[in-house]
Length: 191
Image 1 (cartoon, helix red, strand yellow):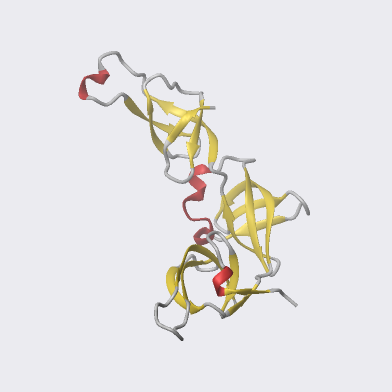
Image 2 (image 1 turned 180 degrees about the vertical axis):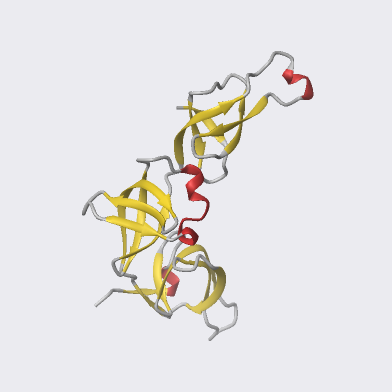
């Protein structure tokens, strides 16, 4: 029997099951009533891990959620084709396939062999979690010329091995590896 979680105990980044689907809490706000006999309400901003839909809903503090049969396993990216993106489970060495809508824009950060965290719900892969930073090789960069800083901008656009285009400082050259933030698509330094 899965453990039950009270709505008031659901915190940011916690996982829970609601209406037979796994959710991740993005924000939790508890509102305590000022009048006697009033209900304490918990407003949750939550993401459905199957559909990626985000919405807000209020619950009574005592409402209970089941703990989802959610497993996070380390996996490495193999390749993508018409059937989806293929990953190798690092524990069972089984090949797992995620559909294009489950991967989203994560392919911008995935080079062959990249390690990620794969989410499995009831044993089936449902999504992935990227690391905060990834290291990618610059596949194309125009040379930075002296005097380019007159416009106030001291960056240039480069193309990375995954096809992602990124603004980087002028000194970055083709063939170098750079660190990229997966949260905001920003240059985070040389690798």
